[in-house]
Length: 302
Image (cartoon, rainbow, N blue to C red; front, side, top):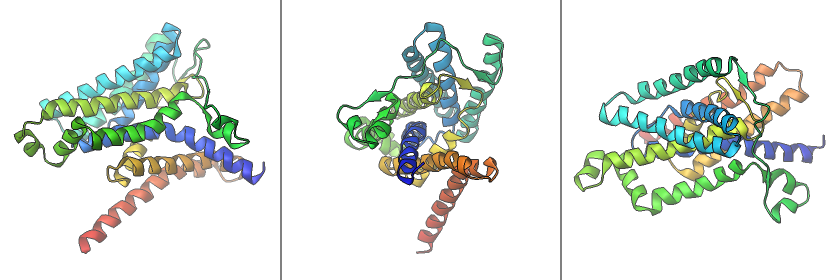
C-alpha cells in the first residue's frame, strides 16, 4: 500500500473511530457544564449499543433500534440525575453503578433472551447505510474515503457546533453554565436548577445512546459484551483535556481516534505483539491527563 493511500485510509478510519468518542464527549461536556460530572458515559453507550441491536432485530428496522437507543440513554441519564440531585448520592459511585448495571444487565439479557454469550449478530439486522455527500464524495481519492460515511459520523460532526451554540448562544445553555459555576447563585436569581440539570444530562444520555448505536450498527450489525472498551472514559478525558470547550474536545477525540486507527494499521505491518499497539489509545489518555495535571500545577506555581 502506497504512503498516500495509507494516510487516507487512516484519516477515514479516524473519522469512523472517533464518532462514538465525539458524541460521548459532547455528553460529558454537557454534564460538566451543569456541575454534574457523569462518569457513567461508558454504561450509557453500552446500553445504547445493546438496545440498538435487540430492538432493531425485533422490529426489523435498524433506525428504530437507533431511536430506541436514544430513548434508553435518556432514561438512564434521568435515573442518574434523580439519584445525584434529589437523593444526593455520590457522583462517582452513581456513575460507576450505571457502568456496572449496563455491563451486567446486557450480559445477563443476552443469555436470557437469546441463549448466547459474548456476541449477538442477528443475520436479519443490517448496519446503517453509507451516505455520500453530493459533490464532495466525487472528489478523486479523498471523496470516497472521507465523504462516504455512516450517517452517525456526520451527526457527530454536527453535534460539535450545535453543542457550542446550545451552551453559548441559548438561554437554557446559559443557565446550564451558570449552574455549573455556582448552583446556589443560579437558584437565587430564579434559574430552574433541577430542570436544567435534567435537560443537560438527558441530552447527554441521548448522545451516548447514539454513540452506542454507532458502535453496534455503524459498520457491522452486532453487539459484543463490553464492546465500548473504555471509550466512555476516553471521551471524559477529552472533555477534561479541552477544559469543557466543544471544539477542543472534538480535537482531542480525533486525536484519540487517530491513535486507535494507527494501532490497527501497525498490527498489520509489524511483528510486534498486537497487545503493544492495542495499548496506544489508552497510553495516550494517560499522557494527556498527566499533561493536564502538570499544566494545572505549573499555573498554580505562577
